[in-house]
Length: 239
Image (cartoon, rainbow, N blue to C red; front, side):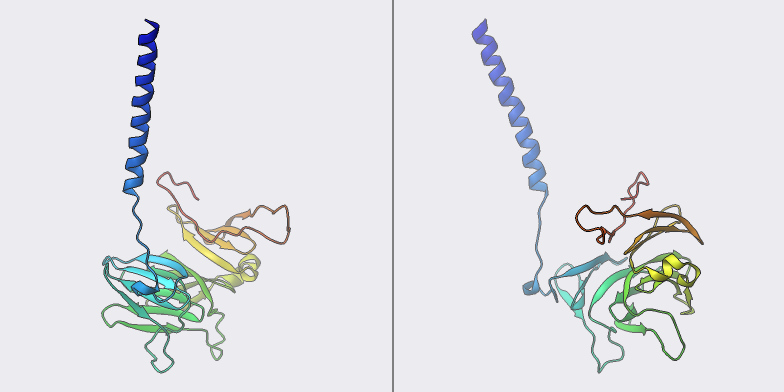
């Protein structure tokens, strides 16, 4: 009887191990990665932003060019000082598609609209003559609803109307937004705008709803772990 119990225990261990192995094996088999590099047509290896548009194309913003991927080949867009219809700068930081299917690109030197039908760009940059506060170094873009975009820059927050092309300087209404360098914007399902800057996180909805401080580091008090990405899951939890 003791021998039978030993055999049964041994078989149970084998079955359990086999089941676990199959589970892990199946998981590993489902995770397949394909790398894309300069050899495959990517313009530069530092990818700073990724977006899939409504037509299914993948867009990759890099430190040297905007890349459009159709599933087979890459097409690269770079600044060309001889072509006024080219993108204003090749350092791409952020991408967003509007309700019309036009793609807006934030660069190191200006905001751009890409019109797929014309395969060309329109540039929107800071104007010294008009005394615009619009900062050319754009870090983040997100939809503000209707015909507006939220634009996060080194000088704060602005609202940009994609139809009239009018800019509203939100930064001047708040000392926090005015002085802090915005690094990430995210509009949650409750229509709050999460503004992540170098100093803290601000939850905004026509006025400041809440301020969230970053945790102080133990080694250097001057260093803060500012958030470059904000995400909301299906349970409305903000990550």
